[in-house]
Length: 300
Image 1 (cartoon, rainbow, N blue to C red):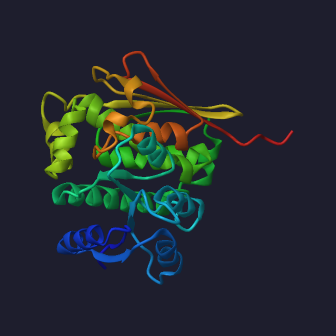
Image 2 (image 1 turned 120 degrees about the vertical axis):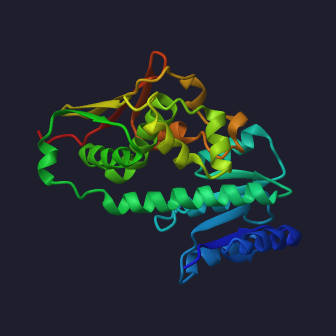
């Protein structure tokens, strides 16, 4: 079944243009002209929506208010929402991202950018749903583990390890995406030296995974691995992820940045820090990161 999208905007021209562009790419698209009507569609639809494109400024129920309502409902908290805006004030954009928006788009909409942003948001959503179905499947005996060392190189190994670490954290649904984000960063940006700008270009050209696979086979990078250590105490699960790269300016990625609001990537560390872990700290030049998950208190 084709992904089902909802476009919400009080401007009829924007609704028509967005619907036409998206339907060209095979999506099933419904539209709404204001927030309450949009909420009714999301709330009562027999077939759930896969993504919502939402105008930030609308009469009655505005975009941020509708975004908060969607994210507050347990049925839809993982539903990707892309905000559309003609207002690029940094504080307003930061508010939308902090409330759970996946991306921002500026109006008037540009077809190629709309295509890439929707595609990436849907792929992230599918991956997240797949991870959610897999967490919790590790043996219950793994809860007895107190320390462990891991070593991996590839994206598939990163996914497997993220699932294991999430299960061991005792909060698998909360932490799994954060672990996966940091493990993938260690591979792509750390060991394989793919820069921020390079990743953006690779995503726009749909060559990101191919480039990763190519570099993994290159003699320059084939001997590099990511090392992960786990330490569980009675009160916390502490994971250290260390790559063999040259590091990066990690301070710039710890919070939502106005400079990257409209990029196709670059929010994963900030999201992991705010939503997935109780503490996230990069060490030195950024080639190592330590994340902490506080465990439920043991009975006295």
